[in-house]
Image 1 (cartoon, rainbow, N blue to C red):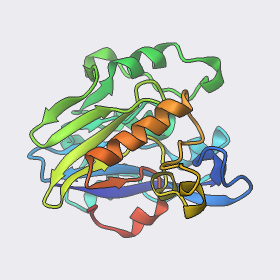
Image 2 (image 1 turned 180 degrees about the vertical axis):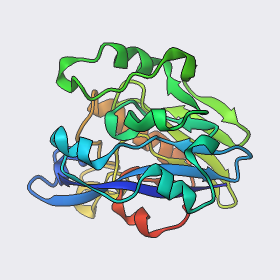
Image 3 (image 1 turned 90 degrees about the horizontal axis):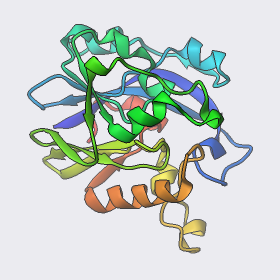
Length: 238
């Protein structure tokens, strides 16, 4: 199995929104993706995407790259072909377009479902609510298909989950924490201070987020950074 990145939109953000307390004043591009898991025996996506114009309307400037329909058509699929969508969390940039996938079941952590129903005002309006009858609610780590596990990795949100797949190279994890590669592989200046990862700049608990990143690095041969723009040029990861 492997992940196929499909870039839906490109945002421009201050780097500190991605890397906690570092990079302030540095604008960077980040990707808003959906990820197709190929080789799973079913048509599985990670995340559902969000339109660029909506992101821009709520203060996150973005440009349109591709629709979900266009991206899936490139591999011979339609949105109706998707069986399962694992939502890393319920922020709008990951879940707003859930209703494009008419035949899919959506995998969500119990703690995320509960928090999204009554989010703290600090993130008011950022969470998507999906009808209960469309959800597969899991509570903690769980195997959802042979060779695919979700890992409860809180911190960015209370119910953030990451996706671990078995590949020929060993286990590869798509980080549910909103990360770029610098989060996973900090510069030497920070490593010399004892910092092994950088928590995401947006979080509900920075220390939980840090611990979740160190956990998935320990479980994986490779970790994929959910928002890094570099994957746009790759057809498959790994």
